[in-house]
Length: 489
Ligand SMILES: *[C@@H]1O[C@H](CO)[C@@H](O)[C@H](O)[C@H]1NC(C)=O
Ligand SMILES: *[C@@H]1O[C@H](CO)[C@@H](O)[C@H](O)[C@H]1NC(C)=O
Ligand SMILES: *[C@@H]1O[C@H](CO)[C@@H](O)[C@H](O)[C@H]1NC(C)=O
Ligand SMILES: *[C@@H]1O[C@H](CO)[C@@H](O)[C@H](O)[C@H]1NC(C)=O
Ligand SMILES: *[C@@H]1O[C@H](CO)[C@@H](O)[C@H](O)[C@H]1NC(C)=O
Image (cartoon, rainbow, N blue to C red; front, top):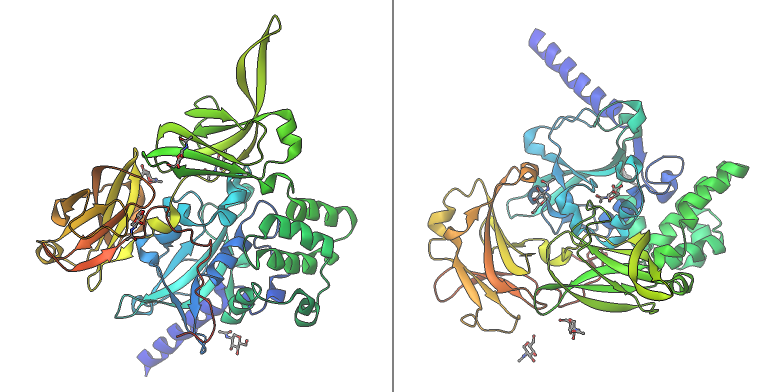
């Protein structure tokens, strides 16, 4: 009896914790009103939520699945344990929490530009506060089931509360909110007032469309959330929010700066959307090792030559992290002779270079392992992610090899180079602590990276292909995967 009483009390406390830990549930876009999450520039929460909604599969019964692997660190997801302070405690068999949105994690490179753009073009801690947390469990067949979705945020830096998430700003997300966000991509704008009971300011929507129009549904999400929020604020304050979040330097956000691959493994700069105002002043594209390199340590540069869009092939070997920045060009004169240009004020930054869609590892069929293609110093490289529970992998993969092909239509023996799987070397990297369930093995090949390169995994010497990566940079995939069509199963 006594024991039962204690147990009962224990369960009561547990469920109280579950209730108290989260501030409430968001079931509709309307509920995003009034909460802080992602509202103001440069916060990225609404982009994270939009990305998640469009990359999660929801069946008719509201069950949610992922087509990627958060335990491997895909998209920068990282393990957040079973007993975090701001969320209900989980029994290990009911899964674990994984957190998305830390833009300093390596995996976040794979998120599309629309999620990362604000982060590269703003300063200070506000641009990295928002997080989406999933409660994830693996079913028997390498599928990831999502039981709960939460949005949360770090404390403000001046609150001195460390790196925990703020429970007072942690909300459960009902699947119906995710469905509503999915539908925004195809909804008729004239239906918005009826469905969401809001009037959208068409000028603001047009501004938002100019910036976010390439991501279906994103502009509408912002328009609805902000038009719900703005009327509550009065006068100057409302205008301040508006300038911060809606206007967001309209002109510059159209600028696109990208690094691509030449057919010789070198970085190729592509730019577009440079406004005339800037072209008239003369601007240049400048290549940097990564976002942290200071403005003096450029790797290469080129004037844009008055062209709003164009490209420039550098002689810099391709590496993850490369970044293009747009700078004003300052001409140097000496006694009326022009003798070169120097770099002036920085105007805009692209995201760090990653071939995101290629860098999400592909499953090796029938085994707890996956294969990833990436680039280092202009060469094609591969990683094997092996689940730690797959202890017999060296025996199973004894005769297995990874081939590197110049294009997807090369036959099996038409590889450029290859390597035994068991000869890959174990990779030691500090951020691999974020993927505690996997060991990572790597091979740096001598094959020059170029568009179309592909890695394949062969189980046996002469047969049994069990995995192939997407060809490097070849197919233009859309920023979001079309995974949300309803009625699919
Ligand atoms: C990029 O660099 C700027 C300036 O150094 C910094 O404020 C910002 O946080 C950096 N962003 C990333 C993604 O590292
Ligand atoms: C989610 O919302 C639906 C209605 O849209 C409701 O029936 C359901 O109980 C909610 N689920 C949770 C976990 O709150
Ligand atoms: C730049 O590289 C691309 C891709 O390899 C190639 O198609 C193009 O011809 C190159 N341009 C120049 C000017 O070399
Ligand atoms: C194979 O790929 C190359 C380049 O990727 C292309 O030029 C060629 O036409 C393709 N051949 C076939 C049969 O598809
Ligand atoms: C990110 O990856 C690079 C290269 O793969 C590695 O050198 C670096 O340590 C990683 N970042 C962190 C935070 O571990």
